[in-house]
Amino acid sequence: MSGVDWKKTGNRNDFLDYLLLADEDETIVKSYIKDGDMFELLYSGKTIGVCLFTFPNEDTVEIKNIAIAEACRGLGIGKQVVQIAISHYQKKGLHHMIVGTANSSIENIAFYQKAGFRFHEIRKDFFLSYPQPIFENNIQALDMVVFHLPLKK
Image 1 (cartoon, rainbow, N blue to C red):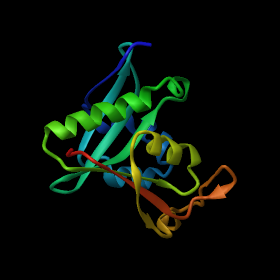
Image 2: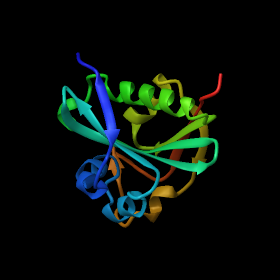
Image 3: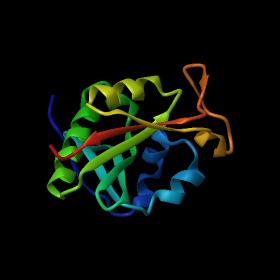
Image 4: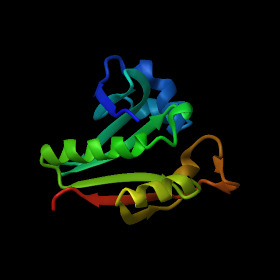
């Protein structure tokens, strides 16, 4: 398996379809698409996804959206992207990384724990603000589960 690489994106709107893979409400995605740092994900030289990071405070980075094309999932790319992000933001001197996912996103919950994140908080009823109900694994997305990873050793 060749490695994944990333580069800063040009026109962020060109990557809207990728962002919608991870957050299915276009209005909500458009509300944060211009925030933070956004990187195009490259695998064997081809664009296969995108990740967007925001900064809720001066020492914390949040994985706001990480999306990989379905054909490229299960190859360890997501794990590589998280490791690249950890290294990148450690070098920038940030102390914390957080990420939120729906209570119904069983695969994401397992993924972030395997990557070393720990449960941090629950944002109750977070997904009730979405215009349409979201169901995954026959579970309605209601709450956001927020994970934390310390970046400073």
